[in-house]
Image (tube, rainbow, N blue to C red; front, side, top):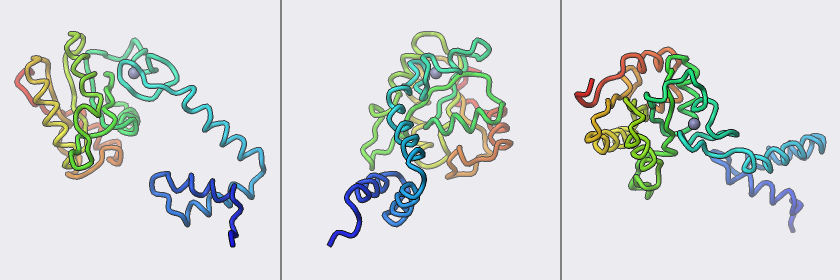
Length: 203
Ligand code: ZN
């Protein structure tokens, strides 16, 4: 006998598709939503519905944004010639919080991970090459995480950009090995940006 009403079951199944949410947590969340006033559920549904309609990728840096260019690319006080390359929008948020970076960004939307079938073509790497080839960039600061895939991606980027003669730098030590940069504290991250290290001799 089916104890859970089908509409509730559908919501539970949808919630289990979210990262880190197992069936037990999904059931708890679904029951919570059900017990709250209907207006709250409608708000949540409205927010989900408008998400894809209003948020797009910025055509320059590929972050999620309601405007194109995004607020950072469109800000005349930011230096478009210094480009910080990060894995995810969450990493960009972490760096912005430090207030130590006045350049612009390039979001890869992942890291090279052959075991998971993610090669350079799956990321915004060609777009980075185009950006650099346009002659509007002086320095690329590679701020991928110090995890194995993050380091592999950094090496790959340094290699393909080597010919371009622009400055290529990497976040300095201080970020522990294996650490995702969005979990680094603001002070450590600010220091790592300030004392970034050159990966080529264009400095
Ligand atoms: Zn942008």
